Length: 209
Image (cartoon, rainbow, N blue to C red):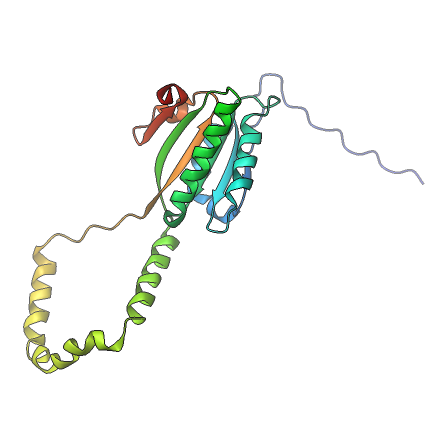
């Protein structure tokens, strides 16, 4: 019984460009969502390694992964992305500073791009839940003054209700608070895709000398 031959592989037309490289991701992949668009843009021309910085992240291991990627001579145009939640930004900055120190020790120039990014709606919900837990953990004595004034406050409920309706009709709606955090790009070579953005600040090893 003869077996069927496998179908021939399809070849890309000679004039069609090769597909963009996918960025490598280390850490919590669920946090990469806000960075997918920027990573897709840069990965077309650069080898990008995305590294998340969490409270449980070991700084030494992150620095080792980042610098190994940036100093890899087999890679064309390597770059790294460091991203973190607001609570872990200081730790991320420490990782970035140590990465630049290692690059300097190897005689390698570096370019750093700092950019604020918007956190997803889930982050806002978590922030509100955290605030609610803090309020619930307050000692009971903190609300004694409010309890003592409940009777007098109830007499003004009708007035306050009318006042709030009037304010809603006349005053502009409150501004929606934007939750943002910081991400850092580091590369041995300049990244013009980032430098052209108005929201990005740039640092280079030439500035440090």
